[in-house]
Picture 1 (tube, rainbow, N blue to C red):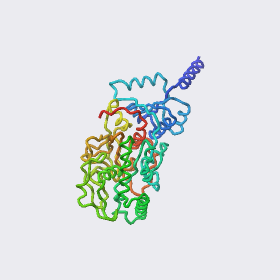
Picture 2 (spheres, rainbow, N blue to C red):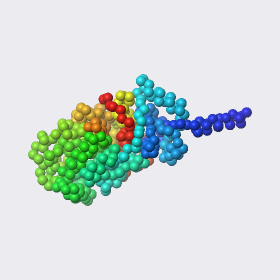
Picture 3 (cartoon, helix red, strand yellow):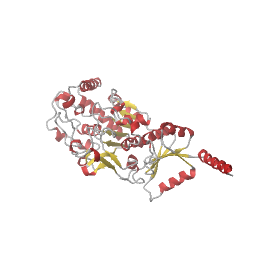
Picture 4 (cartoon, rainbow, N blue to C red):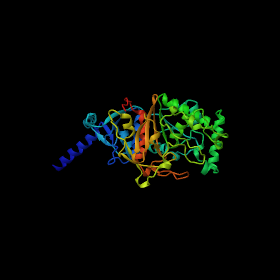
Length: 420
């Protein structure tokens, strides 16, 4: 009798596994062992022209996809936790999500977005959090820079990340501390040579045209993501179009007198009413950044993700999917954004309310979208020049890095109109 019972049990078990119709990749804290690689699995499925359902606010923003032997093996190889579901169980989950009483939604991901990272060729992948996490998650990307942007190659991509670039032509405001170091001298020389090759007299003029091309890319329907100094320096460059804000050590001639009064805030994406930092001896671009204004000990430096309506505001809900609403803070040249400098039509998605700073913001420009994320590396609190790279294998469940990957998958979603 026991043998018959055991036979029936084993038969039923393997029958259930054999007839599973869906794979659920859970994204909650309790069951997912590698959140970051889970995004790579989702991208891998999309690249095979298969659709995925992103279950917003269901177990940390889980992914539901058709079951295949290849998918199971890939999850096992990459160390991604998954669950097998029958048609009935999958339908039950989707019915729960559809309920008006639940702040959840199921968004269809339709295609693998083609990703570009704007970064100079000499930069190592570990210099930038986005390239690190794309590499770790096994999501392919292409590196482009000024030449490709000016030749309109952005049109080939669905998603663009701006490396920690200085679009103002002031070489990252590193002058005071690093002007005599070989790497600074070399980078300045390379930037000047590239500008001349492209037909410009000044690096600042060339960077402005690059910023304008990127602006047009977003207005035309592109998705742009930026971190650290690429956020505020991009907006500053747009606002200073036709105005010389560079001191002689940067571009060889004097800046325009009273240039602050000539700044046009109507040209920016996210920021307004900021005051530019005139001194080349100060490692700061403007009053947008909160780095020098912060008085928060590392031990209690966290920011909170905002809660949005999944059914009415799926865009910010997608971008905030996580297994926790509390994310560790981290520093950068541009660490966070002064709330007083953020335009009224820009959505704050992550903030440290006590310090009146925004860490993670999103907006619409024309037909496209942009997201700005303050700080350099979510798992390196105070990253400095020359610091060793972050080993993401030690942080496979990083909430801070999940925010980056939310943005990577965002262009794959079948869009619904945002209500907010």
